Amino acid sequence: MNAPADKSTGLATEINRLYAEATRLSKESNQALHAALVAAWQAGQLLLEEKKRVRQRMGPGAWLLWLEQHFQGTPRTAQRYMRLAKSVSDVSFLAGMSLRQAYARLGIATEPKTPAERTVMPSLPRHVSLANRLLGLLTVEGKRRSFASTASLAYQKDLLPLYERLRTLFGQS
Image 1: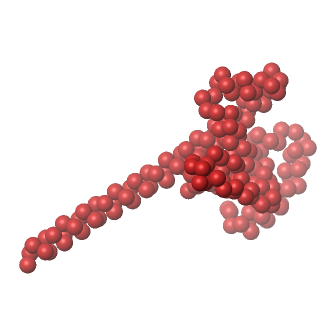
Image 2 (image 1 turned 180 degrees about the vertical axis):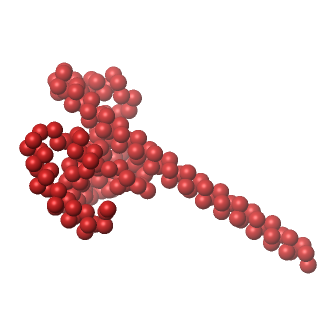
Image 3 (image 1 turned 45 degrees about the vertical axis):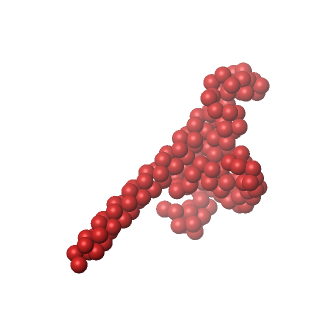
């Protein structure tokens, strides 16, 4: 009678080992997905800054030349990274998503993995896009980037009560 009990114990040990491995790998996978998303967002921030600098110094036509010479990805990838950076002021808003899922959520077009996946993703509703822009303008990160002039500071001061009200409605602290 000990043989079946030993076999059952051995199977339970293996099942639990595999469970622990699946849990660990899943956690590592989620961390890697988030790290990829953060890297793309940060690259988008830097690309936006560089695009502005290149256009000011060399004119609008120089940007694609700069990308060809300095960016290892495609111009389309650079465009997606910049749209991601423009669309979201705080990348933690997209926690738990892959880069492709974030693109879909934000209405950023991507190349399908396979021809069968060529479905058109609807864009975010206008109010969601506007709320994201407002959040970007009113957060600390947005203040450093967007509000250099006195007029902009006045807009920020006027909109801050609205921001605080909306933040409480959506449960952010």
